[in-house]
Image (cartoon, rainbow, N blue to C red; front, side, top):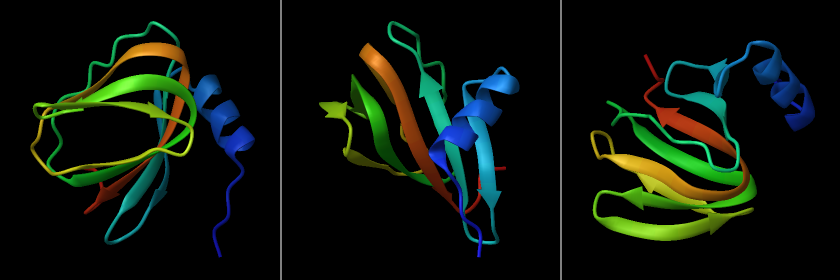
Length: 105
């Protein structure tokens, strides 16, 4: 079994001084923690994998393709491979679990 605590992942991400921490990589998927602080810019580009975002905490808007939705704790967003997407108008520090399938390269 592989089990993780969010506070441990957040601490590891912060120590490594990055917005993204991959903490699980398997044959068919990878999982990471993405952090954007209030007012930050999301600079990610479209990915070659399907993604699912689960918002753990914070508030923002997300645009996927031409659609925009507000997101907050408990929101789940699917992003098909190759589709442009960004978090924006981040009004509270955002922490998001990200599942890539197949694994992010």
